[in-house]
Image (tube, rainbow, N blue to C red; front, side, top):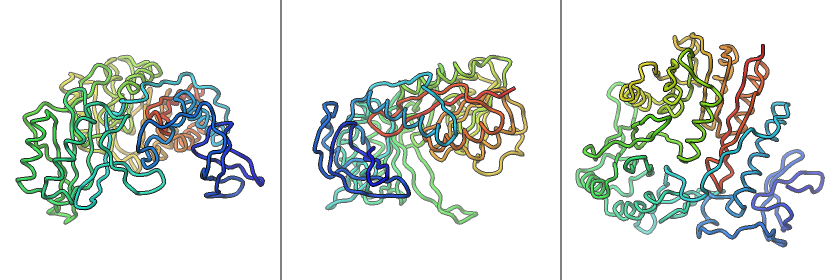
Length: 419
């Protein structure tokens, strides 16, 4: 950050104390952003990138910083955002949780590019849609890195290779899984090749292809597992085994997620007398851990396939005090039966869009405790303001470095009802 001509300029890729020649990029009002043209004075803290794709890939944009410096900068930026948008001084976080910088990412999506008759998998650039082809990535788990070049070679043998939209890898607590999204129905030869690959590599293979709905005539997707004879993918949360499909969302950083689940339990302190609501619950990352206490827990999410799997998992984990339903929390839901009940505590973990409607709902529902997990501090500050203006106080907060080397930070905000 620098001051020039009465403006505050935000300059990515510079460390405090460094000098550089920069070029203004975007300016608005009293601030703007600028790009580094030439580094003139280098900080002794600056690290040389250990990834050859650093200049092209938009993933690890902070790898020039020491991990502690990057994490501290992200936490301070989040605090400044809350101080400004919520008009409160939130102070230092109660905790900052971090894990390994490399080899931590157990799930990722690869974009696809056809170049000179060959299909490549990779990641998009930071400021462009250009694809950086990837054979291995330092932040991915060893099993994903081992599978990546093998799968790329197989894809280039498929007749439908140019109709591949994207590929997702997940390294579950059991076997790994791969999800391939195609824009056409695959022929039997391609399906057989993918099935044999999965069996040989002991990797669950799932494909999604389009079909036309007979009633609405809309084009939809159907997901098919080609390796049914392999065991299911699963993750563990709060001592429970959660089976899932390769297309389902799971937290990418297992070690930090385990800490996050425990921090939520520490904040809620669930017991058998409590009724707890878990919004944007997904597979039940927090739901199952909360239900293990004996509390009556109800999970809500928009993705039907994940809710169906969560119900199966509740039965397999013998948790009759746990139930789920499908609901779009960005559309009117307030008159649904579950939304008219009373809850002692609510946990919510929305996507990057935040929980605007849910925050309004919670400010009227008035549970004693609200625990918000957020991967977007800007959206979280907006939703927090709704609660702070309607009878709640911020009782504590913390940060999780779920995505080391990136600009992203995960927050936990605990709100208690004011008497």
